[in-house]
Image (cartoon, rainbow, N blue to C red; front, side, top):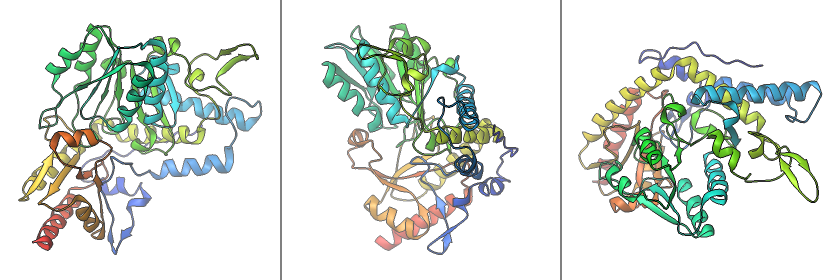
Length: 416
């Protein structure tokens, strides 16, 4: 059994020590030190995660749940230990409420299909918001088309905040589920999910929370939020790609039909009829990404060792400093100015195309993302095609923000 507790205590003074845990950060791009500001797309991986994955493939690789031999028993213990770590991280009531998937997108699709099959009928309604990632729009559109249901959308104000009064107005007897992003991947807005859930529950409506951009920035307590489903991806939280989590309250998971059929999710198979296994295995058909799951467990150990409050407090310093720096630039338009937000800066610079800015920043060794960030309906609200997005993590520094500021000034001069 691998334990990867980290003894670091983060502060502005020892981020250098933290950065040394991430091999990819200690390199040069075009002759300069890499500045990685694309953390909303994927986070970098600490050495403990990389080392554990290598060790598992080298010394312990075997399929889970199926074998009576030593390797299978050991890898199964580690796999189920990772489930317990996720349960503790989310403060879920039961470990069988944790379903391993291929990512947040897969988790949402599971609910959209299974919940839809069990509960949604013609002319029923699903509520989402204007700031959703495509992964929390398209699965519901597909479900609505299949079931003859309708999609309702909560609007935002120009600061990038949900209009809760509008939300209250569109809830009605036909509403079957609310699916809302916890943190906007384009604006950084932190939505008041606890209040959103409370409003829905007053009307006996379950809520799914897309936590892909929230899970890495601080502690999440699904019992306190009282959400019915919560999803996230491992690669957003310093773990491997190709693995994700679906948390679901026991009641819903028991009643929903499985999304996929195959091995490991069955109790008994006959040609005439198949009965399904108990939770969580009912929703984990086939060989899971057990190496990735254990890697996620290692990432959670690493973060809890640092301290989630420490991470949150430090990233708040980055947010405040970065906001002050960027808004000091003439002709820079910042999108996403909510009172409560994470360390994401989406902006346009002068009348320069975002792609051009992104390419020039890359040549200055600064990695950002450009485009619509899988939120095309959101940018229609602002009447633009997309933005330049710098998204920060706890291994970023104030000095790197200074470098971004100076690079943007250079780009402005070039285009003048």
